[in-house]
Length: 379
Image (cartoon, rainbow, N blue to C red; front, top):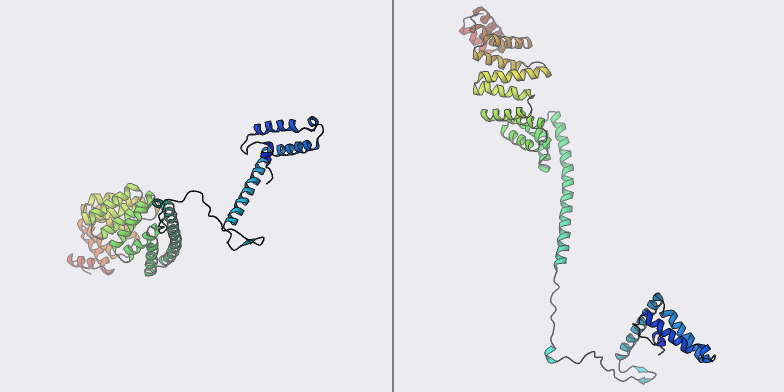
């Protein structure tokens, strides 16, 4: 086997660059042709030493050379193993090979060291469990995300159908579509409001309407919207005969929005008919009528209620003033003629009272007919 470059310089493979350089200088001086009378043998040695230093004296060339040495060593070991396990019958150059000797790297193990290692089933480690858990969690999140998107899209479609039916006054179809919307998206505030209005104003189911208004109130994010919902809740409670609770709801609505004329009027109505607190009713009805007059024309209904409250308190001039305004708005109302007759009757104007009762009777209002008979007004 030919020498390696390390052997040419006479250094170990682990020698430092300084050691290699020192060895080269010594050999170059020894084999330099000028010091050996021009001997060709020494000249060949000098060239060999110079070639070895050219490779080993440079870091990159030395690393490449070391790698080549390593590969050569691996090839030699592979060849040795192949020869060691060559079958006995195999011949090399026509001569049978001797039986191979077993390769031993250590003495045979003692009897105490001989044992069998049972290999059980593969077990998951912590990293495997974390990986599986992450995959399962990702899959679950993906499924729920797709489900959420589909439900949102379906809920929006059902709400549009319900809104069209609501605007067309197709109450049953609107109620079904809005219920489907809330099944897919229970926190749809506008669907809750619309369905509650149908329950309250069309079906007169105040219990269900109040539940929907309450759910929408929990989702409301502005004071005016919350005030409107509290007003609606108060209406439902008044419809259930829960006057005190209704007054509390109307009051909460007015705390949020003092310009909500509907809440003033509704609370005044409860004070008038349920609680029979006429001064308080007149105060609320007056505030509501004043705010309503700033936005639209006066309401005959609420003027009639305030006139009735004045009448119950014995304030007949103010009651007469309110009833006369209603008469201008509803000249064909038998009820208002009857009420004017009662005021005239209380004021001692019997002839005027009879005239109003007779007009109410001709307009077909039964209490006016009965009052006319009791007062003996004649035809």
